[in-house]
Image (cartoon, rainbow, N blue to C red; front, top):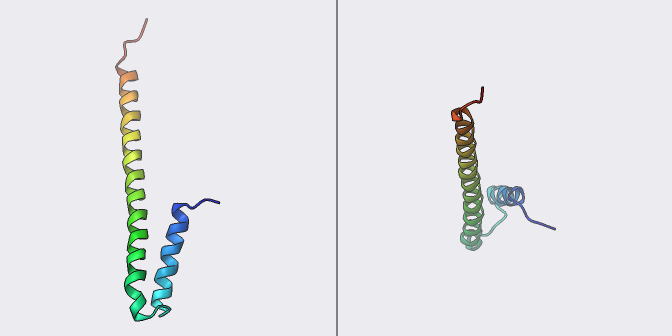
Length: 75
C-alpha cells in the first residue's frame, strides 16, 4: 500500500470539513491546524517541484529542437 499526493489532498479536505462541522474540541484545534498546515505545505511543495520539473523539461526540449533546426543540411 502506498500513500500519494491525492491521498494527502483528501486528508486535508477531511480535516477541513471536520473542522467546519465542529468535530474537534477547542484544545485540539492547534494540533489539528498544525497537521493541516504541514499537509497542505507538503502538497504545495510537491506541486511547485512538479511545475519546476515540467518547465525545465520544456526548456530542454526547446533547446533540443533549436539544435536540430540549426544543424546544416546535406545536399
